[in-house]
Length: 237
Image (cartoon, rainbow, N blue to C red; front, side, top):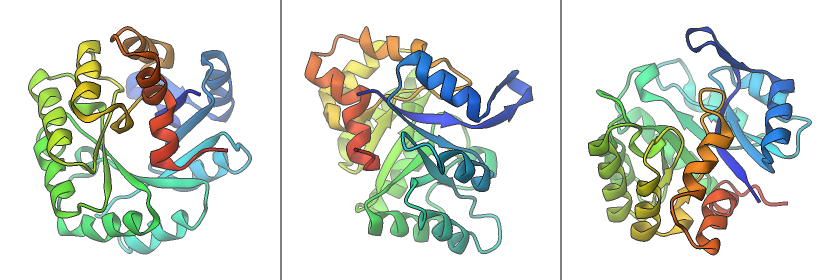
C-alpha cells in the first residue's frame, strides 16, 4: 500500500501549480497512490473533496491567530474524514510551541491523531523549535513535514530530534537527500518515517523514487511508503 502523507488542494499561482478534485483523482490513479492525506487553509474546501472519496483523508488546517480557532478545529475534527491537524507556523506567523498551540496538541492527543508541522525554514519552522512542542507535549504525535527540508543542518536536526523524542515522526517530501531517508529509518525506525510528496509542488513519482533508491529492505520500504501512515493517521480499511 502507498499512502501519500502530504498533499495540498487548491490553486497556487506563485508556483504555477494547482490541484483540484479531478486533478487529485487523476494524480492518485496515475501514480498508484492507494490513499492520500490532503489539506488547505480553507477547511471547507477539503471537507467537500474528501466527503465522497473513501481513499482520501484530510488534515484540519489550524491557525492560532484567528478567533475561536480551537472550537473551529474541533468542529472539523468531529468529521471522521479528518485525521489530524496541519500547522504552518511559517505562513501563519507563530512559534510552534506557542501556548496557543497547546490546546490543539492536547486535542489530537486525546483522539490519538497527529500534528503535521511544516519544517525547514527560519524563523518559525526550524526543527529545534518544533521539538520544543514535542518535548512539552509527549503524548502528542508530532510529524516534521519535509524532515528539515533542503538544508543539511536542518535535516540532521530533524533526525536528531526524532531520535531524542519518541513522539516525533519524519515525513520525506521535499527533502532532497535519499541517503538521509535511510539514515532516518536506521536511527528512529521505519514506523516513524512517512512518505509524502508535497503535491502539487513536487510530483509523487519523483518523491517515491527517493525512498525506493535509498537502500531499504522490503519490510522497511513497505512501512515508509504506507504502513507508517496507516498507523499514524489510522486510515486502514
